[in-house]
Amino acid sequence: MALLVLGKTRCVLCGRSIETASEAVAFPPLGSATDVSRQLSDAVAHRAHLLADPRAAQITELWREIADNRVAGARILARDDSRLLAIDDRAGVFRYFWFPRLIALEDESNSLRSFADFLARSASGADAAVELVRFTYSVTTVDGRRRLVVGQRPPAPRDFAVTSAISLSEPLIDEPFEDTEWADFAALESTPSQSP
Image (cartoon, rainbow, N blue to C red; front, side):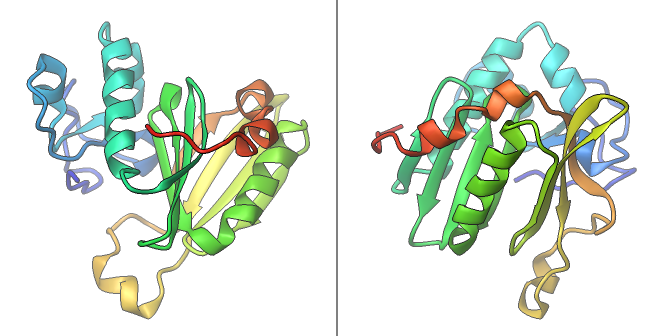
């Protein structure tokens, strides 16, 4: 995965430095030979620039390919055109990808039920929050607009050496949230497993 140093790492699309984690999307090294994948391979870009890019559909498709690679060998719990939820028993984590916003979340698999309950509560229109092992998640309404905020929890002592230099008080994700985007999570969660 590309290295992100806030205030130093430059957006591969605009060349300006990335100042906050919530505006960044980091890409792993990519083996595919398209122009988009060559440009984004092992790079970081502003989320807003990726979403506004004329190649946004190709970028979203690339994000789907990355998700498929990340969940190879995992159990697919839910998948539709905009989301993918999988549990990797070997690694002990669940992975959630939200394709239209280029978001990837990962947390300990024993906290999956709490995450699903959080999504169901927030999709019902209620403000909701949950603290899982690695991250905190909240959906709140401010000035009539709903926002999803994901923050990093302090690392366990064993994880401290590999934790990024991102401030623990700064959100990793701060995005507009529409109830309809996750409203069918409960139904999705109960669909049979399928291969990516």
